[in-house]
Length: 163
Image 1: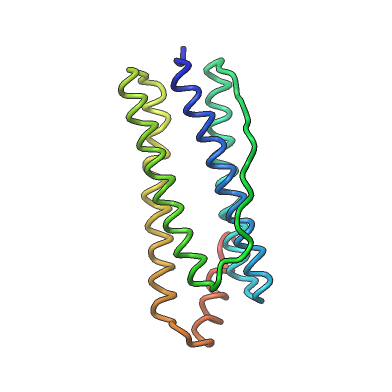
Image 2 (image 1 turned 30 degrees about the horizontal axis):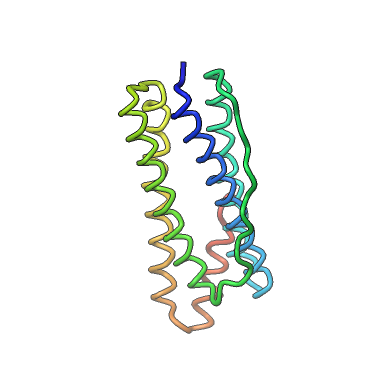
């Protein structure tokens, strides 16, 4: 059976994952407002992926007969300045999520919770991918600079995600 301390921390992570979804949806709305529907689509797909992460933790807690306790989700910002800034924020946010996942793993190890350690292994690997993707997109924005044609092509490319 899962220990209360671990279950509480996983409940907090559900909230963080739902905030991530909310944040990426806010970023998508900003990009739609800037006429960047491709980038907005990429962020909408990412928002749904983050919701899926929350549900994965939710289902794990249910499978462990632990109580799921949902908390209020903080409001994300509405303005991000530039499309490049959006993805710089995505990268910083994903690094924060990675630190949170690592903290969860440390707690599971400290509590000798082998089942949760195994469960969290997927999230550790997922965060490597999340950070690498965000870093790659930030780098592409740096290459594009202020070239509107480059932004146009980047918008088109990112709009192909999941299609």
